[in-house]
Amino acid sequence: MSDAATDMSAYWDRAGRVWVEQQALLDRIYQPIAKAVVDRADLRAGEAVLDVGCGSGATTFEAAWRVGPEGRAVGADISGALLELARRRAGEQGLESVDFVHADAQTHDFGAEFDAIVSRFGVMFFPDPVAAFANLRRALRPGGRLAFVCWRSPEDNPISQVPLEAAAPLLSEVPKFERNAPGRFAFADPERVSAILDEAGWRDVAIEPLDDPTPVTAEELMTMSLRVGPLNPILSNADAALSARVREAVAEALSPYVEDGGARMNSACWLVTARR
Ligand SMILES: C[S@@+](CC[C@H](N)C(=O)[O-])C[C@H]1O[C@@H](n2cnc3c(N)ncnc32)[C@H](O)[C@@H]1O
Image 1 (cartoon, rainbow, N blue to C red):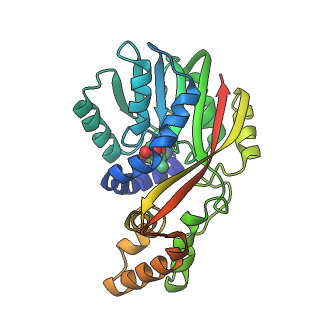
Image 2: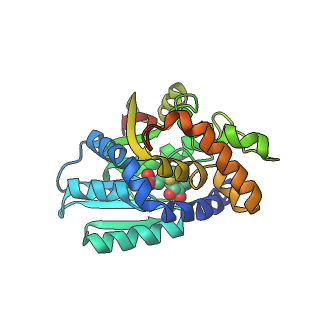
């Protein structure tokens, strides 16, 4: 593995543990997005589908139901912790047409076996996105389809930025957001996404906005703000007094979004499709 790939793998081994811990909440909040991406892939019974950056498997399972027992759904991920959970959940659901592989999607040879590739938030972390999408294109049979969802800009997702801004004055170091760098908002610019896919050989690229205003409780909003996302690694190393002050500042800053104990946690995304 290259240094960048090793860094990403180490990052997701740690971040993956948080996704494992919060799996039920994340699944509920992002379920409509899994459904939207799988709908758009237009999967048919008997097809083979690859879910890239599958995490604990929610989108792989959604795809598996569509292709049915004659089809095949494979989830690929670099986080061992998430794959372990994904395999366990597949067993619990009795899904036999599902497989999970521990693989770096940027370089792994998947064989030209798939009719479609789907991904929910799993393709923004590649150090070399053109190489990654050229590699993923090789995983498809001729005419194969790609459908994925990625985040629009931080400005379009204010509710996810408020906690970081509220905590910043209390912290000695705040994670910097670098436009176009591998990470959550790497594909915020649709022209960049289009250029990457063009260069990687994809055709019929289409990018449209997808907004999902899922309702959450105030407590779930705090969990998403403090446990999932960039504040988590900082707070894991912070003492109790600092954690309490950050918690208070974040709750205060989020209060305008909360009404009657709940909030709308809008996910502002791009839904991207292309053909091999
Ligand atoms: C934001 S999470 C999304 C997980 C899942 N798709 C979901 O929506 O619940 C991103 C996922 O991409 C995986 N990932 C990041 N880089 C990857 C790579 N190069 N190859 C395979 N998986 C990768 C991470 O391990 C993580 O599970």
